Amino acid sequence: MAKVKVKFVCTECGTESPKWMGKCPGCGAWNSMVEEAETVVKAPVGRGELLRTKEKAKSIIDIESGREPRVPTGLSELNRVLGGGLVPGSLLLVGGDPGIGKSTLLLQTSHALTSQGLKVLYVSGEESVRQTKLRADRLGALSDKLYVLCETNLDLVEEAIADVQPDFLVIDSIQTVYRPDVASAPGSVAQVRECTAQFMRIAKVNGVATVLVGHVTKEGAIAGPRLLEHMVDCVLYFEGERHHSYRLLRAVKNRFGSTNEIGIFDMTEDGLREVANPSELFLSERPLGVAGSTVVASMEGTRPVLVELQALVAPTHFPSPRRMSSGLDHQRISLVIAVLEKRMGLFMQNQDAYVNVAGGVKLDEPAADLAAAVSIASSFRDLPTKPYDVVFGEVGLTGEVRAVSRAETRVKEALKLGFKRVILPEASMKGWQPPAGIQLIPVKTVADALRAALE
Image (cartoon, rainbow, N blue to C red; front, side, top):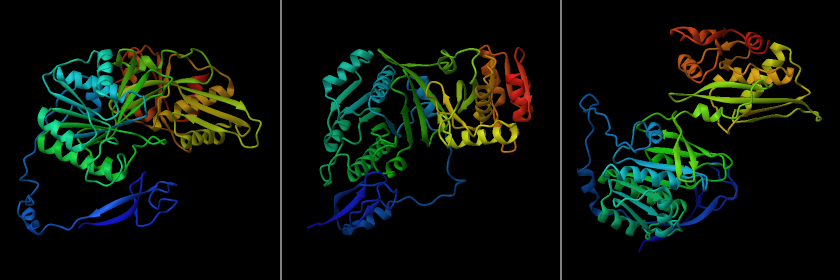
């Protein structure tokens, strides 16, 4: 008879402990240790059979190289994030806040794949078949090659996969699926780990591209053990603000492509609509000729995106001024303010500073430093910026403006949208020919950029 042992597993990171602890030693989370029953099974006697069938090590020179085959999903934004399309036999994990549109995105993708003659099996553990049909009616995703199953038992799901033999499989969601032989509740660390391992085996053996939908925690990370993200081939996050209609699809791990690309969608009553030019969307409500507003050219993978960066500097009534930022790293904003105080002589020790990227976009590259400096100085001096200027560049601690990558691509995007001038680092002018129709103002220091933008 198998020996039953009890262990405690952290629901945040998957750290195991023989006893309960209030604080997880792995990730430091409080009250995250849950009790699970572990079944220890002795290894079979004939285990040597497995050793005789294992592959031998090969020299890397003798291994044939070839490109992974791709299947276009029918959505160009999703293809961009995936690196060109779905790879047969790959295992993908899609996470996002509740109600953000994960099921809508996957149902539209399933319908687009069926139009290419592929069979799709959509397994829903959270909605009934009728609820899925109602969403399909609203989205117009109706096809005889799209099969829907409402089941959470992994054994029954495997039978349906063997019966349908799909080319594309969707599991919505992995936290609802359970294995009957695992003595844990659905959604626990053990169940999520074992079910994901089983779906990975199904995807690799049968060559079925499989997408797992994962719940997220209140911090925004995918719920379950961190091992879950290591097991899959691609991890996608579907992000967006509830008060805005657009959604961002971002890859944080991709074994078959880049992790810097983003896909932008607009949520409408008829489903998700692809946004071909995101710069026009983010700049549609930009005020002209006001203090504290600057347009920055940011790179999201290979795509240039122009967004509005706003700053507000106001007198404070507290001994310590506030420094708040939304969409930008708080530490970078503190660095820019310190450079303005030390190098430019702006006395901001009695001023609150608020910086916001309009539209809820998150910028994580240092090219937004110079635009933040111009916006903060513009609001501090109450001088309006020129409405048809684009600013980008990295700011150093000595007040210099450092070069950034892909300056030519950023300038061409600004020219396409009708901007007249671009303030950029002088070091970024090397190696390319500026296009006609737009004025380039190369700067070496922050002082040069402020004179060009505000005077």
